[in-house]
Length: 73
Image 1 (cartoon, helix red, strand yellow):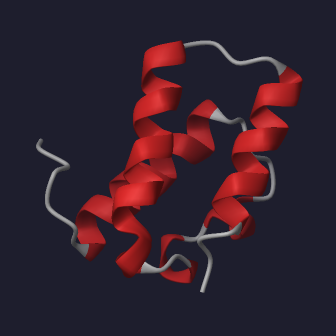
Image 2 (cartoon, one colour):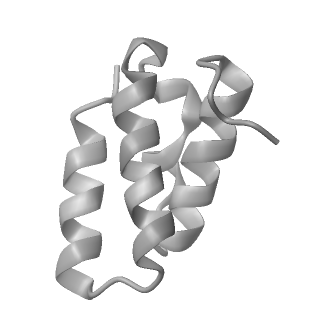
């Protein structure tokens, strides 16, 4: 699946994948409907970094979750 196109379906895939990788317990924080589709490129960039890094430390996870919070509606 190509995630290059900014659409709601791809945003949902990216947000749900990041929720898994960031081990977010409170999934209501990661509801794809709460994220701004206009910020798709920024959100996808975060996703790409998480994909490249593989495993993340606790402090890295906190930073990514904080950064994602900036893209909520």
